[in-house]
Amino acid sequence: MALPVSISPTQSNAQTAVRSFLLAVLPGIAGQSPAVFQGTISGTTLTANALPGLPSGGIQGSIAVNAPVLGAAPGTTIQSQLSGTTGGVGTYQVSVSQTVAIPATMATGISVVAAQPNRVVEPNNPWFVVMSFLYGKRLGTNQDSSADAKFTGSIAGNTLTVSAVQIGTVSAGSTIFSNAVSANTQIISQLTGTSGGAGTYQVSPSQTVSSGTMSAGTKTMFMSSEATVQLDFHSPDYLAGDFAQTVSISFRDEYATTFFSSLTAPQNNVSPLYADDPRQAPFINAENQYEWRWSLDAHVQIDETVAVPQEYADSATVTLDFLS
Image 1 (cartoon, rainbow, N blue to C red):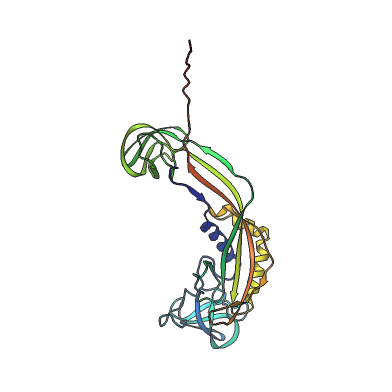
Image 2: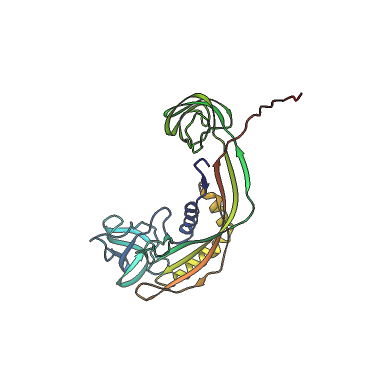
């Protein structure tokens, strides 16, 4: 079989889609990683210091105005910075007056990480979610489609020059079929000309081929599958349960459907189906201490396509043999 074979969306794309949703419905600033620091609060003044183990004066991330403060009183947000390094160590005005006299770890949002058995280090941020893609289930039989491409072209080095296209379009990632072309020659990208038509294309491997008829057809196999994603919500306080319930409710709503469909391709080929009810599952850490953990299974539909190179017969030559 000629290469390459491609699949879309990939599991990485699906993880990105689910992660985007979690970051949208849980505390944090959109598009920004949470800051993690050690802080004290007196009245409405937050003093942010470096986390133990980080370089002197350093915190993880950047503290942003309007960000929530986890580890402080409920509803606390950053109003403005009063002194210190911008977004770093210094003092900040917060929205809720309170007293946190003993330095405590605080964060301006949650972290979301993908699980890998025995390979995920617990984040510095104690408010985090671990995603584990458990298994997939086919929802229907394959739906196949075909797309042929026939053109006149020549190759000099790594440049394919297409002078005319007779059938279909010439696409990056396709494999070129021709008796004169090296096996597994792939179109990398279009360099000049009409999109998918006459022009020049980068190909690999390098070769020299005189002008002639070439093809670059594909067969596409479509399948919908259901993937189960285990979401584990961790926190040093009761918030893990709130986070799990927030996701459980919003994942079952039209809000989630609209959110996933608005993502860019190929993440928008991931759709929410339903989420199970949250369950408490206390976590024992490396120090044999119990941590808050709530867990739920979220189920998503992934509409996947697998594309493979395919040769086609564009015409047939029929001859008649007469037997005397």
